[in-house]
Image (tube, rainbow, N blue to C red; front, side, top):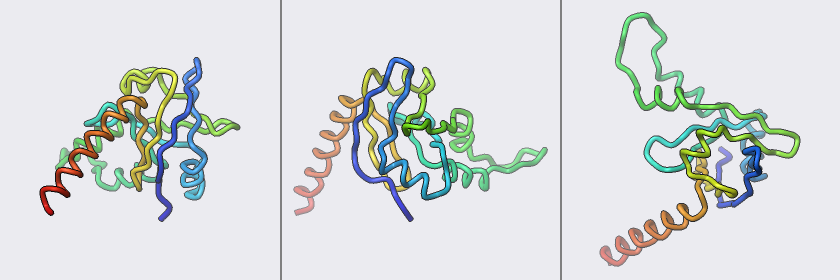
Length: 145
């Protein structure tokens, strides 16, 4: 499987256009896609994305019947907000205004590879998150030594 790795920070223009990093586009295009699927994170102040194929797999867990069955409410919440954003000729997507607001994005956005998905963060919020993670990891290592 080709995965999303690395961290890249790109500018957001006044029209909400944002360049998807070339390595991330390559992962998506290797899956035969010409767009990226993005939704607001359920639990963090960021956006999450991948190729639309990742989200099609969610459909296998969602019943398509007229009689209510056990539901995957997390999948339903993701599908409610999911947008399939096509790449323009320069590898950019146009972020919806509500996505920009959800992630508190201004003029830049940081893409963070998370393996099977990626996240889009406001750069200073990502820096804070990274420091918190480093502290937790250090505490775990020191506590376990």
